[in-house]
Length: 418
Image 1 (cartoon, helix red, strand yellow):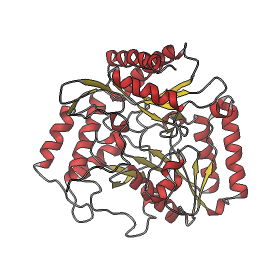
Image 2 (cartoon, one colour):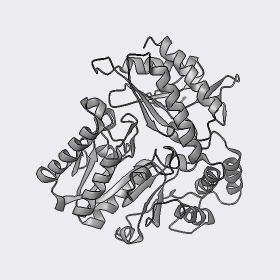
Image 3 (tube, helix red, strand yellow):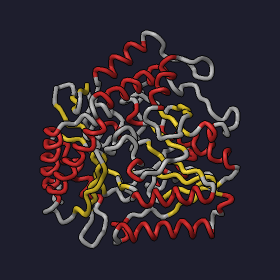
């Protein structure tokens, strides 16, 4: 008997990768593709960065696994020390898990235990994972949350200030979303029942939509006023992806709980939540744990990743190359009537396809993404309607590679008839 992968795991491209190096992946015949997917924002330092490879190899020969409620190992202690240098002020306590979904679930448990309240408010278009509670929070598409019965109770969705969707300017959209949040707190989820707000600084699967800074500030104000925990989901936006180390930084706020994963270990599975010691201490005994959380090899890879991000100036490179990429993509879009928006922060950029009347065009997004493969460029789609193409280059991307990607994209859009 032979086995095969689940038929639900439909690949976005036909590429079978033999190896990767830097910003490129290669098949067994040596054909290369410029990888602007990075494993959905995971291989932040590029494929197989020598420092990360060396750190992982060395750690594999010393200790592969030491369960963190049984023993402590040096990589987890060193990683925690290094995170202390980059985490927002006051978030000095860290819990490790394996995936973004696990970290989201841990943040919800902590918020409910710390406040003694039950309800969680998420925002329309957010993506927080596929595990049960994380899927309940997720409204980036019904495919993530339907077909398996009742979801977790006590979760509510409030409008996200998606100006393009409403046909408004950003200020009007922010005013509306904050007013609707206040209305939700007055009509549906009473303040005394609301444990947390959870939001991404840039919506991921929901369409690569930057959260307006004033909206984040408004959430912080309401959280402070009502004793609500503000959870910022930095699974995809963190570690330099948006041109600052954390995606929420330009707003000037400090979250109560920060979630990180994806790019923190260049492809090794690890996630974490960070909070103040006083908040983290309110978690109940036994509520935090796990067999593989804070795995020694993943911690070693994360240590190396943070070292590379600092030594190679990758946060600054993300900001600079992001400006170059978005400028090039906007120039390429200028003559394409079905591209309604080119947006993003740093190296997290989305291109939205609609008809001039605003009707979403997922066919053009998918067609352009597929045509790009033939041009040697790997991309992904996203968005609640599937009409956004996302660009997620590695943080090591060069000016020449950005220009190569823009040129390939321009050809792909033309080939797709957009």
